[in-house]
Length: 293
Length: 155
Image 1 (cartoon, each protein chain N blue to C red):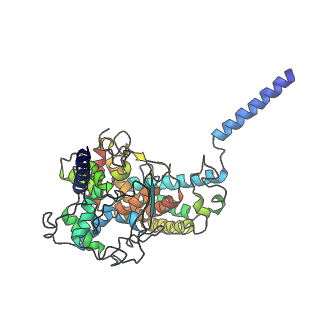
Image 2: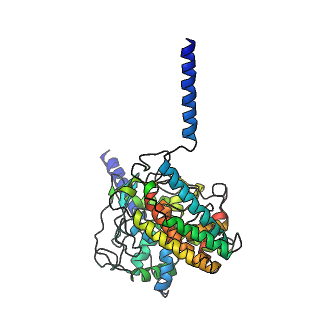
Image 3: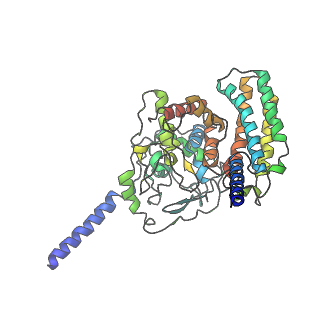
């Protein structure tokens, strides 16, 4: 009897250990993903920066300086309040002391340099599709930004969501780098890369399941606004009737086809998309109009 | 009894009439004026935007006129219709103007001033060709977005 109990206990411990092993925070191998070979270019990195919308979440609350990534904005969700950290290149308060490999592990696997899981409020499930070239370029650009010594503030997340180890299971269930939509032309591929990887549009425009993972069966079908007010509109055909030109123009100027203008969070997004090349805005528009009903 | 019925009918009629008015355009006059002002921005921006998008042919004279209207609208003194007591909290059914507009630290005035500058800059170049006009619409759109980002309640 006692022996059977010990046997079961041993099995249980083994299962937990195996589970923790399987769901341990992953890191990149800089050589395997080619990071070591790419020639980083900060100027190209600036374009990646605007396309990826880093500033929208990481500038200080009320700040207009889209290059000072001091953090501090609060994001209220069903799981608790997340407070964006300082990601300026400050050596102490920011990520100035990180290596390129650590930066890539954060973007691709949601793993911190200290080997902890990040919460998916940081859209690494989208950034996981980034190319090594773009990661290296972005890193080079971010190191040129002004440092802020504003300390990061811990998230205010209750039990059981405050146990970061559980995020390994979440990632195992929900993180994958498959493309959601098909892309047949070069323009569609570029649009898909911008929408699904860099600009992470789906993070707001796609509904989430009870565990906060994107429901890709309802890709871009619109969702509740996690911060309360209003609803984030669906972009599928039938929901959004704008032409390709209309969408590209909206991303450039914020003007809708009837010349109302973007407000709320989308106005911040437009500040980023306004800085993309016209070709990139056109590629996003091509992707959006190709979404099904 | 019949007098009572007449009174009842009259009261009913008055109630119906006032409901009809409320359902029409007899909202808060300040909010109505603001909406009309926005509508005029939108109409004139639409003239310019459809040329910028290539939906209508660029016409220097029409572009100049629309941009001048826009600049004139932006320069109007609107103080009388941006009055306290007309926020989305005060008038939830008709106003989307967030209370923060009237609170300390509000940047609405500043944003309005830089919007007026952008509109004037657009008016100055709108007749100089499609590309010059299209480029100058950007800062105007930024002005719209700056205010709508912080101070307009999302639908």
